[in-house]
Every structure is written in structure tokens, then in C-alpha cells.
Amino acid sequence: MIGKSDRNMKYALIVPVVAFIMVIAIFPLLFSLYMMFSIWAPGTGGIKFVGLTNLKAISKDARFWHALWLSYAYVAILLTLELGLGTMIALVLQRDVKGKHFFRVSYMLPMLLSPVAVSYVFKMIFDYNRGPANHFLSWFHIPPVEWLSGRTSALLSLIIVDVWQWTPFMILTILAAFEALPEELFEAAVVDGGSQFTIFTRITLPLALPVIVTIVLLRTIDAFKVFDTIYILTGGGPGTATELLNFYIYLKGFRAFDLGYGTAMSWVQLILLIVMFMFFIRSMKRIGALR
Image (cartoon, rainbow, N blue to C red; front, side):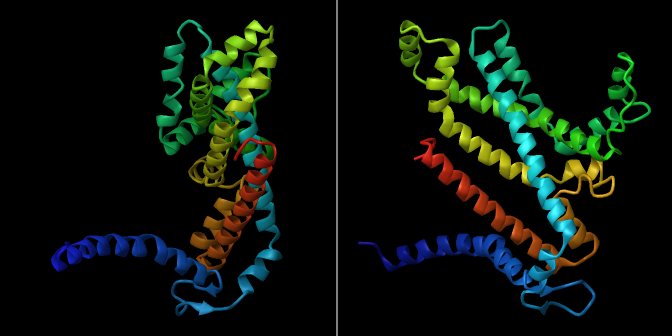
């Protein structure tokens, strides 16, 4: 029999955990949901409920829709490059190539670095006058590129930085998925005369697809949260050429101190991402990639 004191001790141990979750997670979430329908600029007299005013303003905000479209384009290009490079390099490292263990370790190094430190290093690399990037191009008589001040090249610079730092994540996870597959299947395929391309498309890729879908979802979430790289390298410029939605939310919420509008944009972004993920997962289930 459990005594009354034991039951009280059980609740005494649970209550602090529940209170911590309420304070740290649930309360900010509910408060931000209330802020979505409010106006709050510090120093103006507190929070004022305005209903759907913020959402109506977002629907007419061309800068918001530009930032949203740019964010989706940025993430789509990133995922295509990182997934393609990660898969090809993982296939190479899966073979018995000389020094593959060294490359496996060295590919992890970019992931271990702080994005802030990486951004400052690339800011020096992309410097128009003294950067190594333009110095390297001069060897081939290519004119210098305005890496961080051109409308197209600035976005390209952000993509290069992200691909350099996070492609190793794709390499290691895809490589782990490939090496976890049973070798008997590949041996049987070789005996049956299957080519390397056939083995990859008919055996390796379908079996590893659930893992690949999972890491694509993880990288998508992480890519949409990019902020520090933009803040350090371009500041959203030139103009709004690299002003992704996350950075625009920061500008409205913490530069213009329109916290209600910034919170509303954050919720719109969250809802759109949830809808996109639901559609993506449903599509993967239809083709058998997920159960």
C-alpha cells in the first residue's frame, strides 16, 4: 500500500516540472497568440486588442510577401544543392576509397563552428577590394564580383555560406542511412547483373528515403530560421534583396518596435510551414516513402 505521504511526494515532484513547462513554454505561446491580435509598442501605454487588424495589414504588405517568396526560394535552392552534394559525396565515402575516414571527420568541422564566426570569415572572403574570392577570380581574368552588394550575388553569397557549413550534415546522415542497409540485397543485385545506377535507384534510394525525408524536414526548419548570417553579411540588403521573412520579422518587431505586427507575421509563417509540411508528408506517404 502506498501511504499518503508517498502520494504527496509524487505530486510534490511533478508540480515543479509542470510549473516550469507552463512558464517557459506554454505561457509565451499563449501570450504570443494574444499579441497576434494586438498592438504593442513599448512606451505607448500597453497592449491594445485590435482583432484582425494585423492580419489584414499583412495581406496588403508587399514587403511581407516578397520576403516570404524569397524565403521559399532560398530554402528550395539550399535543399537542392545540399541534398544533391550530400548524396553524391556519401556515395563516394561509402566505397573503399583511400582516406575515407579522414574525410568523414574533416567534413564534420564546418558544422562544429559558430554561424556567427563563419559569417565573419566569409565577410572577409567576399570583401570586394581585398577578399580572397575576387583575388582568386583575377587569376582567370574574371572581373571582381560585388558579392555582398549586388542584388543577385548577395543572395548567392548567403547560399554559398549555408551550403559550405551544412552540407556535411547531409553527408553524414545520408551516409549513415546507406551503411545501415543490409548488404545481402546489394550482393544479390550484383549477382543478378544489376548496374550501379540500377542498384542505387531501385534499392539504395528507396530504402534510405525515409531517413532522407526526415533530414530534409529538419534542414527545412533550420533554413527558415536563418538570421545571424543575414545580419552579419548583408543586413537584408542591398535594398530588400536578402531580406528573408525571419529578418523582416526582426526589423518590424525589434527595430520598428511594432511587436504585435511582428508576432502576427511569425504566426502566419508558422501556419504556412505547418501546411507545407503536412502537404509534403502526405505526398511522401502516397509514394511510399513514409508510413
